[in-house]
Length: 331
Image 1: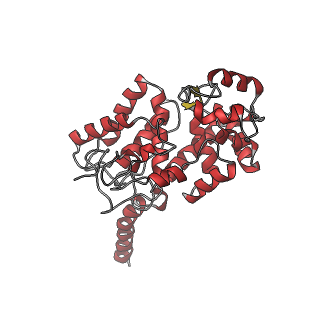
Image 2: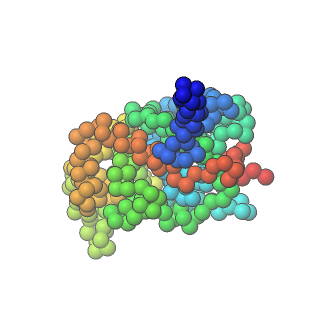
Image 3: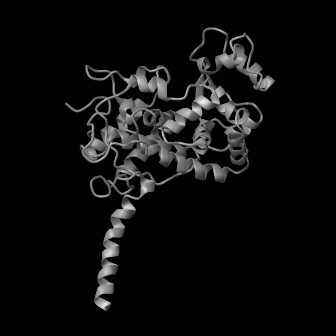
């Protein structure tokens, strides 16, 4: 009997390890220790390059977070956004959500080059994006989380999905929520992940409609706080100046905190896609209030939702490849 008990205990321990590594919350085949033996310094390398980039330009943190988001909403988190155009690929960089605004590709290149020196052919570009997003949050004062790893890189991109799947600044609340739901994300994820707009900037072309012609009748968006709208009109003219930047968070644009939600309560969300979280839906409005009152709640949910987003349809096992250069598929 004692021998049977010992055997069952040993069996349970043997079975427990892989179950922990491949727990459902880690996206099936993704797990944090994926590179523990093949590239144990992966976290350190990514963090070092991102830290230098953010030190040079704080805005880069928001740009890297955005790259991860825009990648995961198209074919899943597979690094497809990083591919340049070639005979086989129509780059997602030319889609409406990315053209003239997606940035940070050079930082990804630097990370990948360093990883190829230390661990050649080992770490995927998709995992680089995921780790860089986490480090971008931490380096600007936001939450950290344990990143499940083991994604592989796609050999294709989808310009059409990039145009259709990624929420646009002037989408209605229901359209934005539908686009999140399609990716397996719910309204809580939508509000929490939108909180990443506590850092970074947006272009005049993304919020001009709110200032001058919100409903197509030549009138501004009346949900905009008047003095805030007047300041925005000084920076963003009716025509021209498409690339002029305004901060997404007028309180603390360089710090990852919960002031974004406080702005929404005061009708000072820059993008329509921001303000509708407070003005268009009762449940999202309550979440905005909760995160405005409790930064810890926001940080906890943001981390949870980032892990969930990072688990959207990853390529694992023998699917895809590990690109040597994030901009092109392996020959």
